[in-house]
Image (cartoon, one colour):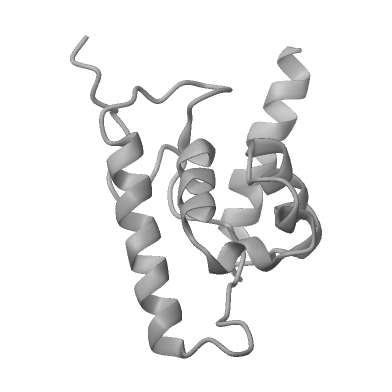
Length: 122
């Protein structure tokens, strides 16, 4: 293979995001510095995952998100991630307990349909 991911840019495999985890500039850091740090982290995460093949359970789009969060100095201010780095399990737990839904019913079905399908097959 060409080792280039077949995931559509800005869309993903399953469509647009259904859950959102919001980050804000911590106290003592300006909004401009926060945005610049975030942009730098996204560029670093993109460079790290640019040529990797998207796999099902490991080295997937969630790994890319973790690469970005680990590269951002502001994302380590969460209580859990101040002493361990972002990984797929930490990201999943934080998304489950702290994320908010994007308000579209169709997305709710899309997310849970794949969970139910996975359990039905397993």
